[in-house]
Length: 188
Image: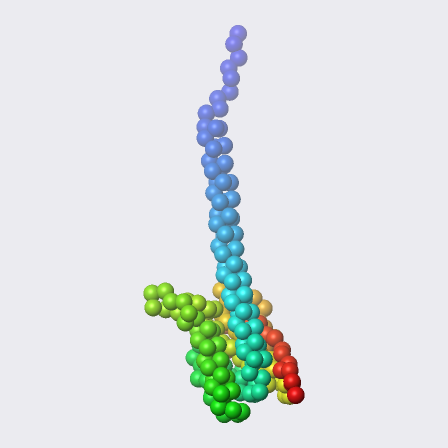
């Protein structure tokens, strides 16, 4: 007498379908991870650009220290500022040569914040998104320099003390700010 084997039709097909579903879920997870990594890399790139522009202005102020007060274009409320939507004041202190250097420095910094050095399809693409630069006099020879821009993903908003670009990006959780304090050396 022969025993009949139970029928197993379709079991292999179900195993293949389950494997494909698991594979698709894994691939979708990898795509999402890649997208988040691209956003993080772009934000990191913008932060590096902001730090370079911040150091550039600190160096310009140190080089033209006799009229450092001319560089303090921002009040305690975070405006005016250099960069996106800026109207820069003109320097009227010190010698004519020092004034010309200060005005040129502020104009060059504002243009760098706007990204005018690189263009693509007629648009400025050489800087951070919506970049703004602030310089506040803290009294004496101490200044706070800040660069603000719009990030791509929401994070914790910057502290209230860092008000450069505040309320300019629609959502404070998108605003990024790097800041530094400098003391202008007195060489007398």
